[in-house]
Amino acid sequence: MTGPSRRVLAWSAPVLLALIALPFVVPPYQTVLLSYGLVFAIAALGFNLLLGYTGLLSFGHSAYFGMGAYAVAFIVKYLKLESMEAFLLGGILASGAVAALFGLLCVRYTKIFFGILTMALSQVLWSLAFKFFWVTGGSDGLRVPTPTLLGGLVRAGSDKFEFLSHRYYFYVLAVFVVCVAVMWVIVHSPFGQALQAIRDNETRAEFVGVQVWHYRWVAFLISGIFTGLAGALWVPLNGLTTPDILHWTFSGKMVFFTVLGGFQTFFGPIIGAIIFNYLETYAVGHTVYWQMVLGIVLVVLVLALPAGIVGTLRRLGLRAAKAA
Amino acid sequence: MSVDILKTTQLTKSFGETHAVDHVDVRVTAGEVLALIGSNGAGKTTLINLISGLIPPDSGRIEFQGAEITRASIHHKIELGIARSFQLVNLFDQLSVHDNVTLAIFSREGRTRRLFSLAAADTAVRDEAVAVLKQFGLDARAGAPAGGLSQGERKLLDVAVAYALRPKLLFLDEPTSGVSTREKAPIMDIITQVVRSGGITAVIVEHDMDVVFTYCPRIVAMHQGTILADGTPDQIRNHPQVTANLLGAQTA
Image 1 (cartoon, chains in turn cyan, orange):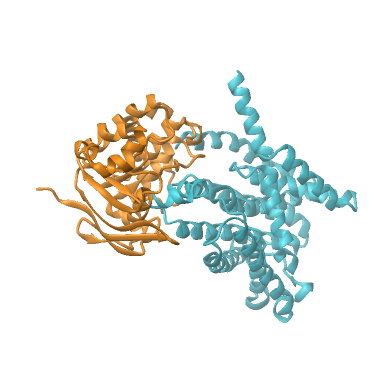
Image 2 (cartoon, chains in turn purple, red):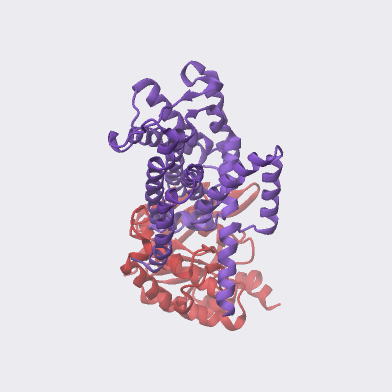
């Protein structure tokens, strides 16, 4: 094992233990709230493979999150299945198929052209979700029952909230840990190094033999799959799939997660997604001007902490280490 | 017997009314170190861009080791063994010096497609990268981000990245531009030593005639998109048209 991987394992082990112990020490509502945060963190991990590691800013990742969520709703509606494993598989396949197709169209462009194209394509899906209401339920959406876990071994029982705050929380946590581990390996692989090279200097990447479009497309596909997986995990928490999650404003939230935590660090988007979830929840609960609160946070963030929370902490840590 | 590694026939590229490269025939012999000289706008960099695949020619033919590669992709040309450095240094600034080189090695070995293995765990590639950096005198800076290097170090790393691809033919576009006069000789000493010891054919675009006459046994002079002269340093020094168009301007 390499030095950085060993260091990360050393400090992530106690964090993981704390996350495992959490449902036994905090009210169930807090655990459910954290489940949302972990789900968004998986989406942010996928999103940041494009932004932080490949240098492509997508404004259309709601498409993949939404495809993951709608895949779950369709599995329930048409296949009458309630297995979470089937939901995850469906979410991965559906978001992967859409990301593969949209990626083909998008990865030939960069900068604002890429951003606009990804947003336009996600808006197409959003409008389709409205228009084909007999399939999608239109603005009412589709209701999704509480799933069974681990091939039917774990069931919800009568207390849904207890299920979500304990059994489902652990399920989300396990998927989250697997996603973090897989993404860590991907971004530290030779493939991940090639993506960073494309981000830094596309022309030079071509001249070391990296076929830029191919690599961007694979990154787009992986990014979409992670985000779709998050969408599938989100549905049981929400109980309902509606077109809102396909709208570009939901893509904007993913940008917010990543900027808040810091897109130039691996853990920044994870921290950003979890903090954003708390921030939004409490802002909504305390004021009708919650959108203004989020707006002010974003402005302050961009002006005062352009590296995000984790990025800034890392810089401060490096400065302190140099001074010592 | 000398063998041509590269041959262009009537290679042409125009940008609007400007004939940047005008029916150029060039032969490069395997193993030689050749200088391409000329004033600004003579067509040197355009010629390199055409051969390396950055831009397509309007007409003409490019052969590499006897096979036509006129419209081959950059990727294919790299696989065949053609690499280049850039006039304006092109590096991966946020990656470390070491990772700039490891990426080239991973790419050469076709391993950049690997998603599920840690790059840092590949000790063979890491060791090779360190060896390459040692050859270029950059091993002490291995952990630094490439964006933090001095201009001279950046120039060397630019060449080291291309060299790590183990090319047969290496184009070096102004390897000493933007560095101090004092740094030029050490940079060229390292580059020519590495190129010669690796048996690499090198084509060096250079403005500094002291560098050209010192390090390159054969010189091709270009002027307004055409070949003006082709010969040894002495032949070029005494060529009337080169003297009038290039060397005269330099010494004036």
